[in-house]
Length: 241
Image 1 (cartoon, rainbow, N blue to C red):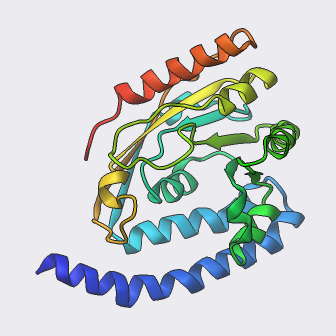
Image 2 (cartoon, rainbow, N blue to C red; image 1 turned 60 degrees about the vertical axis):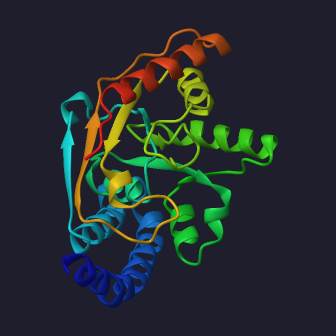
C-alpha cells in the first residue's frame, strides 16, 4: 500500500512540479552566470534545485570526507556513476565550484542545455575525437582559481550496481594540469533509481569523499595506473544501501 501511495505521489505531484522547478532553475542560472561567473551565487539555483528534488522524493543524503577538500584548490573529482540521482547528490552536497563534463547531446535539452552552457560546463562529443580533444583544452582553461571538474570515468551509468572500467580522459586531464584527483564513492543511488526505470525508491544515498591522489608521470602508463588506483579506492568503499 505504501508503495502504491508513493507511486501516486511521484506521478501526480512530484513529476508535474519537476518541469517548472527545473525550468525556473535554468532561467535563473542563465541570468546569473554571466553576471557572477564561478561564484556561489551563480551555483545557488542548481544546488537548491538538487536539494528540493531529493527532499520531494524522500531521499536522505549523507556526506563523509569533506575535510579532504582544501578551499581554493582545483581538483579533478572522479566518481562511480550509479543513477540519475548522482547529479542531484553531487550538485546539492559537494561544496565546491565545479564544471561537469557531460555528453554533447545534453546541450540540446531546452533551457537546461543553455543553462549548462551559461554556467561553463563542458560538453564532450564522444563520437568525434577531435571535438573531444577541443573540449579537454576548454576544460584546461576553466580549471583555475579553485574551480574544479567532476567526471564519471565509467562514461555511463551502471546496469548492475557494480563499478565498471574507467576510461582515461579524467586522468589525462589531471596529469596534463598537474591537478590532484579526488575519488568519490556513491552508495545507494542505484537502489533509489535503477537504469531504465522511472520508479524511485525513497531512502538513503551516501557520498564518500576520499583523500586526494597526487598525479605522477604524464604518460599513458602513468594515467592507466592512476585510473586503476582511483577505481580501487572507489570500489573499496562501495556497498549497497
